[in-house]
Length: 195
Ligand SMILES: [Ca+2]
Image 1 (cartoon, rainbow, N blue to C red):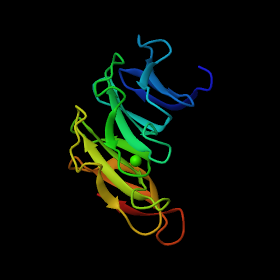
Image 2 (tube, helix red, strand yellow):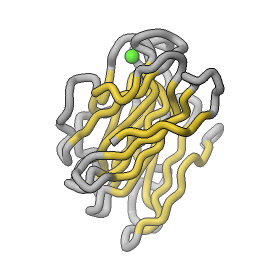
Image 3 (cartoon, helix red, strand yellow):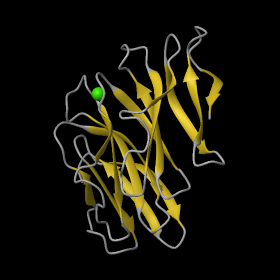
């Protein structure tokens, strides 16, 4: 467990406590108080680093996980996702399904339930220019199928940087998204949203 860092801890009713930890190269996760492998099951074992993961319950005793992935290069980071059942079995493609593998970097994903069994993921996206990131989003169903346009829909691509998204579900299987926006020239404005 050397170099491991607990990054996420959340309580799930009737399912114990999820924990997800990450080393400098690999991400692992498990459920405290159940019989998952004692040192955790791998979330992803791919080349280079996997970082910046987020996890939420899947509503069936398992969890969804998304992360920033460098398997395709340190200057071509992508977004991947995985689902685990209550026994720690990966339910989607081994090492995760591609949420976005567009050119350049996709960074710092956030995720929420779409309240229809799947998830909505948003992230910072540099495909149109580094470091002037934009905001993109994608929806996946409960089987990991992509539901919106390949590599995500544009949420906001104004001048300068947009990033650090946070979301809540809306009333129609979508999301309300807020982000940090520097279009005014002031990094730190949180005055923009999308639904
Ligand atoms: Ca990329």
